[in-house]
Length: 464
Image (cartoon, rainbow, N blue to C red; front, side, top):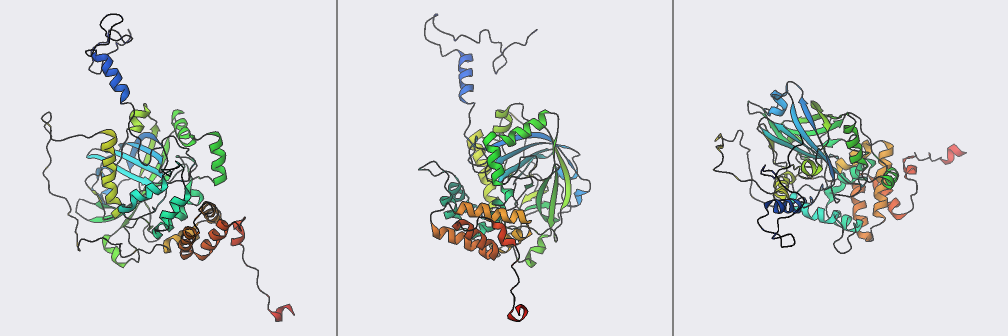
């Protein structure tokens, strides 16, 4: 026997084809609850697009932690829960919901852990650093990256004009304009927590922590030419690849690693470990494997399970806290605030429930010292790590930075902006800056010649 069609309240629907009217040709009646319910539901099937990370794909599965992590954190997702259900979302950062997935753009890599002590959201990126370090500049950055409000076109002049006032962007430009700025697809994409968080164990011992996801399928990315070829055939290629992999019964898997640091160590460092424009050297802070993520299904309903899937860095659980990272604090407000706008709000208390706060004291008060101020962090060298990163890339990646960044700057009409950005790059590495300057100027068709060793100069004596 077929299931009966019902309203949202569960009552049977006698007729789903004809409205309730005053006579066969009369006006519709306001008391037709089923008609109003259908129209109201239809009107609300669209919610505002995300301001950033609008273009994305979701998948679901489980996370299994490594044993022995209780010595570092009391968070049950890493210390006690044997397996935790998860939702993951991969996305582009800047562009609209139906934009191509081949654009040069940081990718979002967000995972929601449904732990036994509440939901924990690890919201990260495909690149390990970011453009800015203070949330005060975040709206301005996004406005610069978005299309021009006059023409509706994305304009490299707007982007680099803003970045020319943000020397801390130099490290991010190295990563973004290498070929790693366009991941091949979501299955072959690394993920980084970017920010510094705090882990606390049952004894109250604290450690700074940074996260990193490594794809089991390996890391793959596209050159600018490869991306153009893919986009010509399919601008949904990354979502299609993820969906097809799961539909075939396959899994998409990642290993989660962390770097740990004693907070007392930061005083001896020449850079600020809470600065999102900086990396932690793996030689000093090695990667520790903490678990395995297995995604095994896609959304049953994309609107319900992808478009309404929401993440926030403020969604934390006991044993995990936010560090004093300025950008992280801004995101901890902005993310749930945009969710309140897009998805609505939930309220507490309610006479319909019997849940109450635990009343427990703050587990580990965070010390605060200093006067209220507006200023840069003391350790803010914007160029050293950018140069180190570029020199550590293999030759193909080093060349891709020169080519891609030089080509982009060639489209910027204001020479002062170009000179400023090239100045940032030159302070990171003189060869890098020279290569980008020449490529932007149009006199370096093959950047590979920069990597060729100079011919030895013969002295008059040796030539004789």
